[in-house]
Length: 232
Image (cartoon, rainbow, N blue to C red; front, side, top):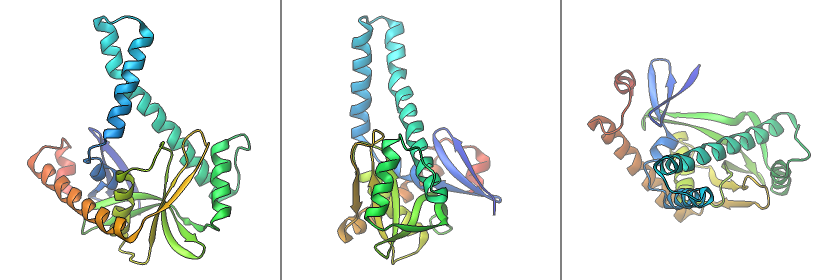
């Protein structure tokens, strides 16, 4: 089964045959992200200060700067995900990369085991009309677990909602949910396993966001091609 990823106006969809499924990350993306907004403001102000001037051209460049930086960090995060994937599949890694060494240390510490088909696995839910790519499915100390890797500076509500969405889409009730957070610099790591309370409430939030996404799509508030809209 061929699965294509399509991004339109910042919204991601998965195409399977003639059907389109909204992305888990696009659904969670409806949630306000104050931490990112604060970061973007700081980045913009710091950039303006470095320029030592405030003309129209500088302001225009400043408004674009935080988006450019966010894309750069996103690319670095993707590279770290690929490094983890490569290690899990081949045991090969860059010995100079602090991040991947931190990942390997975590894997050994929690006795994480997986199989190739459970790495970067796409999960599709017909009932939720949603799909997503899970970083890792496997076992931690023998217990089935769905794990999402984050290279951000912290673990946020959106991350927890995202993994709960994956579990709802999978239909696997026996899965524990966890977030492995290793910042891009690789100076520390946090392995957070969601509590039952976190999972319960974050699952409810995901279902609400999923419904809101569908309603906004129907109202035309989310700009996507008609061809996609007709097939969602």
